[in-house]
Length: 261
Image (cartoon, rainbow, N blue to C red; front, side, top):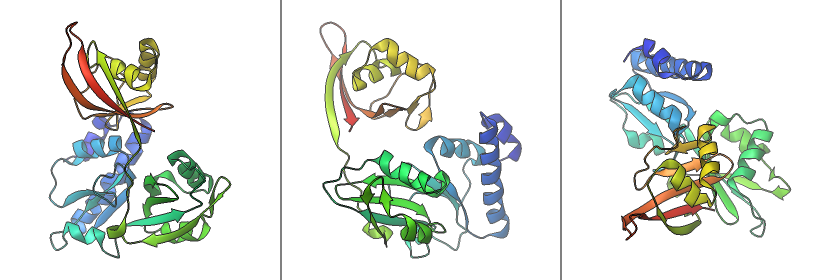
């Protein structure tokens, strides 16, 4: 565990600034033996912190619920258990926005409305949209402001209230199942099949830096995709290589892909 590794891990000036802030925050907690909490981090940012800190005792990730994608990095001293993160003084707050069920709102609608209200992205975790309601996670510091001032998403009126983390309702995502056969499990092949676009266009998305595998950016079209991996493409959405079957008589690989709609 060495601060100098920030230069080796960071890919941009923004990465260096973020990792330096995270390092200082966590190290202060370790030195003083008190809890230390970062902002919400993306899967890619969390992966960088894993390389930076390694296996540090007391270091956890927490996003408000088990399968959260965006999480905080949290240092807890020995006298605190991880379960304490779910208590009333948790650093993460879940807000539930309810609205007229006939109005169709998406993750993009909620995120755009929050950013339009001047809310910093790093203070917002996952946004889980259901039918007529949306549970979204924010830092405890910003929660009171959002609860009082986040009144609409576009033209849709919202009613926002805080709920206990133990009462969070994360809706099952709607998926479209795609069964196909691929010549290989390359990233560009999976994207082409999952989004029903040409292979050359899939390559363009990947080389332009718009693709990520399980949250980690990838610019290599020939990157093999293991079963169970999620692939997101900026501007297209998210898919999952749900199952890999056997080979057909023509030597192609049978796959099942879930596209999130």
